[in-house]
Image (tube, rainbow, N blue to C red; front, top):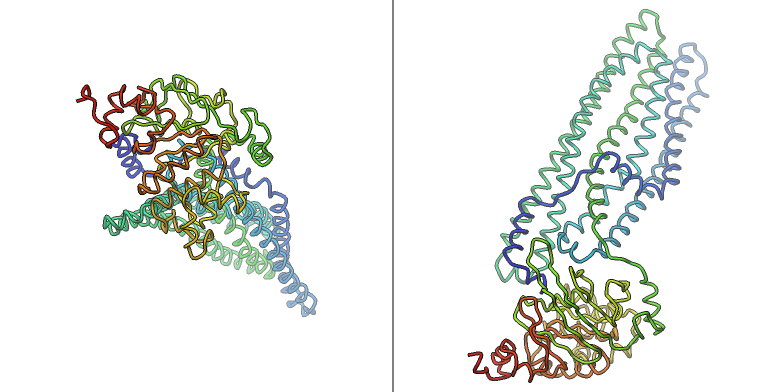
Length: 620
């Protein structure tokens, strides 16, 4: 049973739920968010620290400028030479600019490295997801997490952290310097900033909420686009362009709405910062002017204090920016962490398996190239706990080389046999043995390295014909490729293609016919030289001539390889060594074509409907 065989009403229910509720992203606590951030930040902490040092040095040179300006005013008031102080002030400005630019470059480069590492890690995990996890997820949304969500790490893991650190230290240093100038004016400044800063703190959660919704909406756009592009011909044939445009447009509008909401609250935060500075300036100017008039402070002190006040804008702005970036980044971190928590397959023994394939050495399960035996012992399985069982105590045995066919009505559980052999799914009960060894005891990579699998829909990947053929055997020689082209009856096609094997086949093989895609999938499986070959409706899209030719190829291959075939067209399997008849998740009969026509009513009826036998009177 394939995914398509899962009850339609359940699939419709799931789709409705997804469309209604959208993707769900669990919220992370502050501690979990910081741990996740640090995990991305940690490998680059040396460079981030270096960038932070440059930023701090640049900030220190900036702090010296108001003091230099005070000295300049004092000298002017005393008619002293100001050449030296002007040169020093100019040098401070140039030096500070160069140092800050260098630090900015270091942090930007490190930020890109953080994004690259996060994307590599996430891509590696998502491509190793267990099949049930992938089936429960939306591919478009997962792609959005790799592309869109990881981009937000650029700011939050480097610029935001450094800005918070350097901005905080610079703000403290500036406040200290302002306090040394005049405590009264400092009190006025801090009073205004604290009052308005409290308002900024209130809007930060709203920015985080809007950013989370915006990222989810972006993921929904990717999901909808992936669905439309994945069935592009069906979309056009159904005249559904306008409807799909409206659906995807609604998702885009949702992303726009939440983006605007986030921008609104960010605007409030930034306007509050500007308001705090302006109100502080007016208050300091008024009160400071009064203190100058009373002789409490000098004019140069007031000028220096006002310069420090303007200089305070930068660190305070950095702190606000860091806070807003953190709110946006925490939403992205939550979505990335959710993807990282999806269950993946084991990766042990991959290198050992590749080594075994390349050297042909003996593996624990048997010699490379030797036909594999397969046995199911009372196997039970269901796709999910809320779905009915697919297999009810399935048992059969395939001793070795030869062809074994699985036939039966749709939904009998035939394709599921292949999914369990490949360990795409784990059986709920019973045992599945390959060469007498439980598949759960095999390293997954080693198990699949000995299997060639042709899926029901014979997928072809975007790229060239050669890339598709060697997808499972990247080290195949031209001679080996030519051999399988002949066996799969693809040699004539390659000869007439303008660029031969280097011809681009289009998205999902759109430039090939259905039968050509099926033959490419068969050739790809044969090129792997498997010990066990699984063919799921491998000739369903072939014409009668090519079907007969490939049936001869399969018969030839089955002399050395164990071949398991799922077929609805019994003409493909009438010469099989054994045929397993399945119905409602059970094995009801095993035998040859002649034996089953005579002894099993269901098989006899299937054969009669395809004009391969007459209907037994007992079945009428």
